Amino acid sequence: MAHIIELPTRSDSRGSLTVLEKVLPFEMKRLYWIYDLNDEARGKHRHKQTWQALICLQGKCEVVVKKHQHEEIFILEKPNEVLLLEPDDWHEMRHFQGQPILLVAASHFYDANDYIKEPL
Image (cartoon, rainbow, N blue to C red; front, side, top):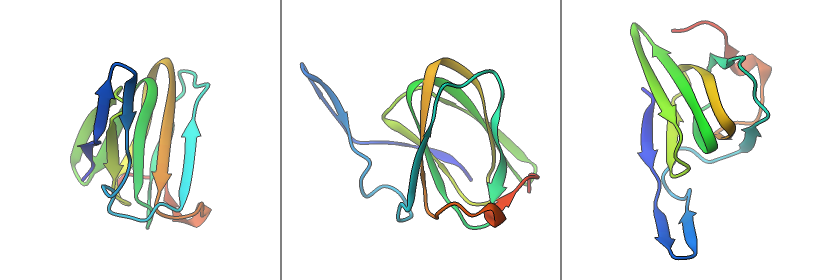
């Protein structure tokens, strides 16, 4: 099931530096970001093979994750936290606030056949 991983961060008087390294259970093959969002939900799917790691670099959003009869809501608003989604985690991103930028690292290249539109 989906869970949050806190990323290593170094902070000093100059600012903060967060590293995404050696924490994901997959090799990253695709990196994309979602921005200029409105009130319309995104996602609303799960995958056959693809793992995903979501980081809200700016702003705030809610991610609803459903798997079997379990539903959990994650709030992403810290750039040093990553939400790890397994392939069969149905997910929906919604309630965007503060001009969010949502960065997504994926284990596979885009393949329309990897998408499943209904929850497990």
